[in-house]
Structure formats: structure tokens, C-alpha cells
Image 1 (tube, rainbow, N blue to C red):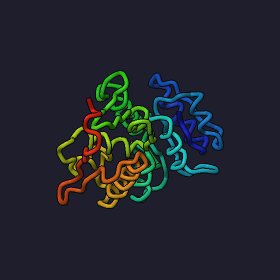
Image 2 (image 1 turned 120 degrees about the horizontal axis):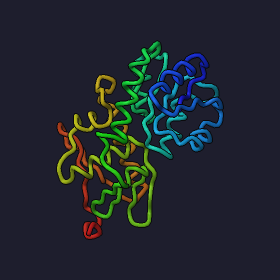
Image 3 (image 1 turned 135 degrees about the vertical axis):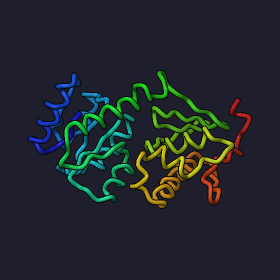
Image 4 (image 1 turned 60 degrees about the vertical axis):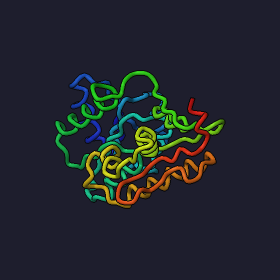
Length: 231
């Protein structure tokens, strides 16, 4: 699914990608994009930032409420902060305009392999459990007892890392590498901000002090609640 309000660029992308056998749809309603998204159910979205009404960051957040399909931003904005914002709002990659179509195809294939192909984690829904917690990564949902909260993709990735590493420490560098492929665009505060959001999600479930900061190393999940529930 292509979301680009410049008709020439959209047409160019559509024609080039379709040549490789992809079923391509170009959105033309920039005010009801989620209706289009639900109808087309894309496996990947190419998303411009500057759009009528709401910008691409907003629409990416809306997509992340319903889907973890790869989202690649395409924008004339070249600032590092724009690229940070793209990742912060749920994007998986960023391409600056002007671009070479072969680069676009290479990034599309890379994201599809990661999400569905050779690099995907496998078929079927994954469920991670620890100390009464239940994480459903594909649903972007965290459950504890009868309560549930919905997560952003970054929050789900962080919690998955914490649960997978428990009782070991999830290193800062490992988290950065998992969440943002190119660490050049991420400063130290970015991970801190995301970790604060993760802690708030645990608090919404009634779990305080769920994540311990291990100075100089990273973060550790403190499973001190209802250990017996894990079985």
C-alpha cells in the first residue's frame, strides 16, 4: 500500500513495484486512511510524512494499533530527528527523497523477509509468559490476570526482550539493535523515553517497579509478583 500525495511519485512507485509481481494499491483518500488500510489489508506500507490533514507519523501510530506489518517512511525530510520520529512512531525503515527505485525495492524485500520470510520468527501466534504475565507480540497486547493493555510495536519489542532475557539483563546495546537497526539515529535518551512508557504500561496492569535499571548494563524484568501463576 502506497500512501503518497504526490501523484507522479505515487504512480512511479506503483508502476515500478508492480513490475516485480507485487499487488500494489495507492491510497487516494488521505482523510480516512485506516478505512483504506482495513479494506486492502497490506503486507507492507510505504508512507509519506507530509500528507493532507494528519501527517504520516499520526497514521503510522494508527496502523500500529491494529497491525505490525512493516511501515517504510518515504520523505523529503532529511533531518536526523525526522528519522528518529519515524522510528519512534512505529516505522521500520526510512527512505529519503529523491530515491532510486532499486533502493526502495531492496528495502521492501528486506522488510518482507524479516516479517514473513526467511528471517521471520515462524508461523502461528507466539505467546510469551513469565510470572503471570502474558505477551502476545502479534496482537501488541500484554495481559496480567483479567487486565490487558495494548502496546506500540516498540513497547512490545522491549517487553519481549525483557521477558526473553529474564532473569538476565537485557543490555542497552542489544535493545537498541533490536529496536532500531541503524543506531546512528538513536541517542541515549530515546531508549530511556521508551522504557518510561513500558513502565507505565506495567503500572496500568497494577504492577509497579516491574523494570529494574542496572547501571552501566541495561534493564532487567523483576518477576516478583505471582510467580506461581507462571505454571
